[in-house]
Image 1: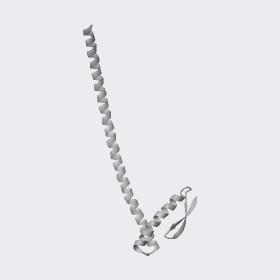
Image 2: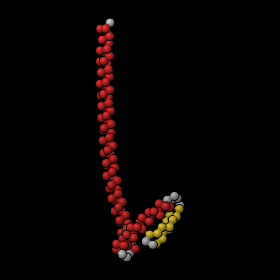
Image 3: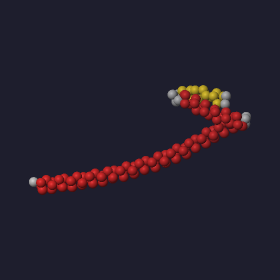
Image 4: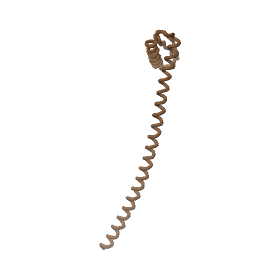
Amino acid sequence: MAQVTVTIDGKQYRMACDEGQEEHLIDLASRFDRYVAHLKESFGEIGDQRITVMSGIMVMDELAELQKRVLGMESEIATLRKTRDDALVKADKNDAALVGALSHLAERMEALAGKLERKAD
């Protein structure tokens, strides 16, 4: 298991992660640190624990909003897939009807051609 040191609010924390995930963990910590810095700029020194809790809540709020958007998009995708599937079924039926009509027309034309040949003889 790999280990990295991340810095949040000027404090270093040693953390373990899966091999190959080091940069990802460092990036996550850096992003979280930006939340902490933003709150410190807005509220000043109100205590490390309170700032950390507030930052965590901000992250969770952002996550909840993104989850709502994903659910909305998944619903929209399902609707679009159903519409596409319905259109494909309708197109298949139309194709089958057209093939049937063309086949029937070809038979009639062949029959007429046969009659014309007999009359010509």
